[in-house]
Length: 471
Image (cartoon, rainbow, N blue to C red; front, side, top):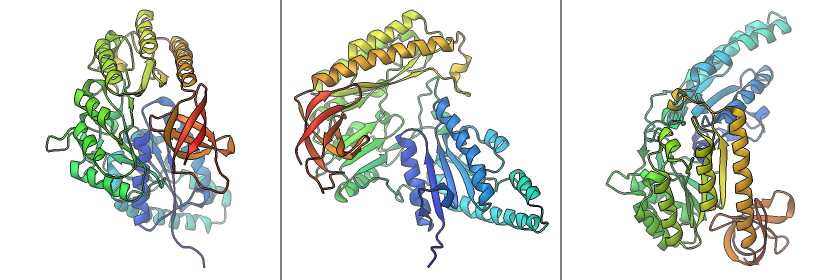
């Protein structure tokens, strides 16, 4: 019997927040009776969930949209939608450049999806009626030309929506052992280079008890790793005065065997109490991702980061002295407006002094609508790229040294997936956030999602090698 269920396919770009949003969208669609498919050509609905933080992901979005017109030629009833940050930021541009897009909505309009799809279905049905009349004329070439010119359903979400109606309970999680839990949305920081406050809106924290209940249910359901998400988790406010440190402390008190991670921290809001909670926690991973962006206080002021080089280094000193075996990662931007060689050298010296386990390194990318566009003194692109290359070389040497020094250590971790280059090996993420590749200790056993202990044997630039000694 033929399956008459409508199918959907989601293409996701960007950070963990976007992945979490896609899981929420998938859950909402399944509740409406849709079925997930890994094939775009089988889908009745294709959604591209987008990221606007940097230029490259946004360019990829437009490339995918260009490809989808071919699917529309084959299947005129296909609904094509674009959502996420690019949809919020570039909706007018999308409407002009891609008239066949049927559905456009921002991150805060996911709760509107049932209504939007109902409207899109009606509009597409009307469009198909027009196409049927065109086909009856018998000129297939003309029909193809007209199909491509025919506008999409053109259904839009409420771009001023506050996001209060997001379907947080209807999440279709990609993993059976790892879960993302969004604790807050939006951002109040307005870093001068960043579009997030304009695409995701101002900060909104989810209720304290709701988050605790959700995490408790996940642990009881067998989830072994929970990642708390927010643009700036450190500024979480539960509504009754509860802080992020309070939330971590309460989650850590939940019984069970699980890890808790979180992304991302802003240095200006990282409190001494949060550091102390992490130091004494059982379940909270000893890993902090703490973007510093620039080692120059002058550039940090231009970036509107609201902390100094000295404040950041003071935080690092507290973290290292209070949290044993902590793993530190960061974000850095090379070539921001007015960055001199002296400013850049401040960044180099901070990178060398702190010795992060790894870092996400980028050259400055201008984003329309941000305050940084009005700052004079743009650094030439070739200089930005050259500085980025220097940072990459420095960080690779540091990471290699750290990884090599870990040989002989024993770490607990969770098996995440088969190793990318060998079916006989497994990829393990340790409690302190290192990736270890190790040979499966026994054949015929599914280790994915299992806790293991691994002894590190070798360290390389991007991964560690090891042997599983307990499972």
